[in-house]
Amino acid sequence: MEILRNFVVFEGGDGSGTSTQIALLGQRFADYCRETPVFFPTAEPTDGAIGVLIRSALKKDPILKPDTLARLFAADRGEHIYAPDGIYERCKRGELVVCDRYVLSSLVYQGIECGDALPRSLNAPFPAPELLLFFDIEPRIAQERLRSRPSLEIYEHLAFQEKVREQYHAQLGSFRSAGVRVEIIDASHRMEKVAEEVWSHLSKMPIFE
Ligand code: TMP
Image (cartoon, rainbow, N blue to C red; front, side, top):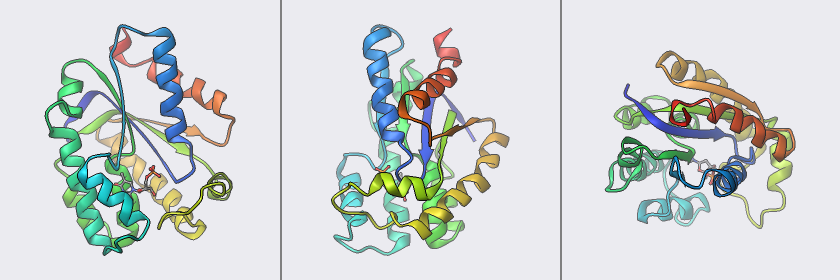
């Protein structure tokens, strides 16, 4: 598996705070690192055509079969990585790309829904990140955070999120063995403390030397 240098991925169950942390990181870059490296925050599903369709399907409009969703997530990812000015090109030219969710989300969520084989084969061609931060949190606490949302998506219920957490823990080891630096963050802390921990891991990357 190719490890893509300068590529960082945030992973975690729903409500684990990954999006908030990417926003806080953006703020830190704006305040302190205006010139180098260039910081490119991004997320999956993307806001491209396939990602928009996925977002609708997550709200059951339309209702899609789990294996269709697995294929859509992988197709969205293929564009995200390899399109001109995509993740691959940016990392290769020395930008720091931080992505909210990536291959491991498919292995975990679609793995639960349609078994391991399909998401594994669909995602096998994609490069792995240099650093993977897993935001670990008790699903019950994460569900509390989601309560204020106007409507919940198809995976946002406690029984599913318990399986999600279990699967994340089960699958992190294979990324470590493949040479990815994996760090587990206690995401139940207040967001400022989590942000410091995120920064302590990121700032050790060779791109900052
Ligand atoms: P978000 O809540 O982080 O915006 O992600 C949207 C949902 O999509 C979340 O429940 C996780 C799910 N998801 C997958 O099931 N497979 C994937 O490959 C990705 C990227 C997200």
